[in-house]
Each structure stands twice: as structure tokens, then as C-alpha cells.
Image 1 (cartoon, rainbow, N blue to C red):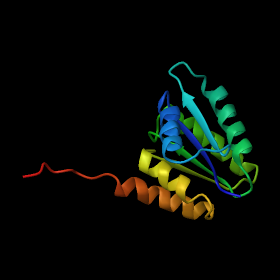
Image 2 (tube, rainbow, N blue to C red; image 1 turned 45 degrees about the horizontal axis):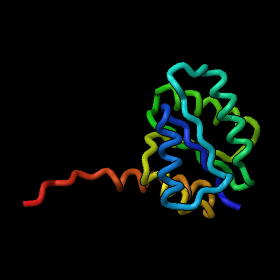
Image 3 (tube, one colour; image 1 turned 135 degrees about the vertical axis):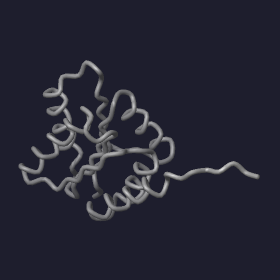
Image 4 (cartoon, rainbow, N blue to C red; image 1 turned 90 degrees about the vertical axis):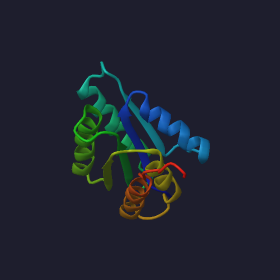
Length: 135
């Protein structure tokens, strides 16, 4: 068993991150994607995300990655995560999703959920660097 991963972001970022992750690693059924479009109904999005969380929980918990804290995708993901927690599910939500965060999460999915979340956050932070021009 492994930690399920859900990517929730502004359309088409969630699908694009997923496609990039699948380019690097073989994807399986425990990675869910939800693109929030500009016309998406927040209540419908929240329901769809909660359904994805339930579907992708293989018993080890679910890590939800979202792009911009405070924007609609993270807000609907947060409400879905809170509903899942109320159902007793083991779930973590991280904002600021980027490719290194996703790759770290995918690489470490066999670890406990809290450790997967910690490693995903470390991957995101360590990947943000200033690249100085060579002299």
C-alpha cells in the first residue's frame, strides 16, 4: 500500500503536473487530478475532490497538493480535506505545488503520510534557487 496523491490546481496546471510526473515515474491509480476552471462551481469542485480523496485512499492516507494558498483551488481542496478528516481519514494538504514537490511525494509514497508530506515540502523548498549567470 502507498499514500494516495491528489493534485488540485488552476486549470490546466493539475493535469500538466500529473503528466510531467508520469513522464518521470510510472503513474498508477492512486494519483488523482482535479483542474479548477474559471467557470467551475466551488460546491461541485469540493464534492469532486472529496470523491477523489475517497477513491485514492488505499489505507495509508492521502496527500493533497494545491497550487496557490487562498485561491479557489486551495479553498475548495481545504474544504474537501476538512470533510475527509471529519470522516476519520488520514490526510495532509500542502499548498505551493510544483514539480519537485510532486516528484518527492511520488518517490516516497511507501512512507507514512506525515513523512511523505515532509519530504514533499523539502523538495519544493530545496528546488527554489537563484541561478546566477556564469562568469
